[in-house]
Length: 400
Image (cartoon, rainbow, N blue to C red; front, side):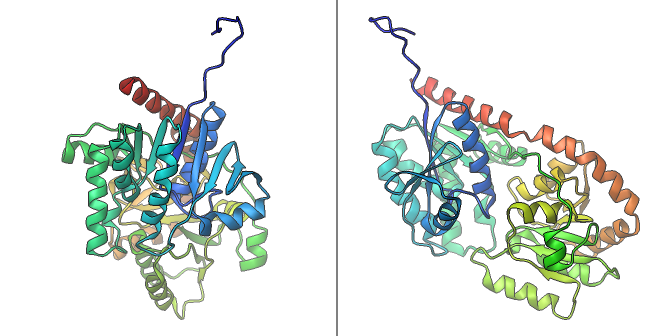
């Protein structure tokens, strides 16, 4: 396109603001990893993306990474603009206070799209929506079902769910199960765009061997936030009744769940095979995934489990609870094609399935050989970014 003087005019970049995530660079948190991979690819596609960050989550990692500072409280990371805005980092006020801090900046600037993540933050999309700003929301799970919330917080999150079904110009969900839920409950059509996966680097057991004496195929792995809905207590109870020389590695940390973590440690007392590592990142995460004999995902509640996708991408044989969100990944055709399932919350069934897999290592190896190509192709971040950009364009076209 040329102006009247004959010079070429470039099409302005689509300006997008991300609201609701804790921040970047991503350390713990599935939404944060989702945003990092999505936003870096949107930036590569020509978008001008800003991610609002909470200082307690992002400041240390930003300092360690030596990121370029582009302005007061602003940094550049993987082509993404990071902006630090405050929050009250308590269980009930963290997300709400941060979203409130984000609203003035998001509505007063010339963003084309304000993209909210998770039910709680989406409640705040009402303000920019009322001011005629274009909004998109992604529901990563039904957060009000999580065990850590009391009755008041659950009601607020349920209000966020109703807002997600009515306020944003477009609603994205990360699983087919969530798509059916919004259609059945609210007659709301949504865009199904799943979480994605990056093809990982397989690493030999070096640092984990030095630090924890872990060798290839010497342990069963659980990785995730240590909160009740992730079901780690089922796994510890089931593992305690199994005779095996393999270890159980619990890689994860607290999310306002200190009482639950104390319960897990109490359950594991006296069993020297159970190892708690806290969160693991970077090359250490590569190692701990690359060398596990079996990955167990015993959750009661999920949106689309990123940790499960990651485990499959490393070629892990997976045993997961049979909730629909897990089953749609490892049994998409109704058969256990890419992993194994046990009845949710059933410790005896979990134990028997683990015992069977421990007794049949060739079955584990056979399953491991088929899962990596499937998950890397089916949950591809490049395609996910392109689909998200199409949602943005549809919103802009619709609103004119």
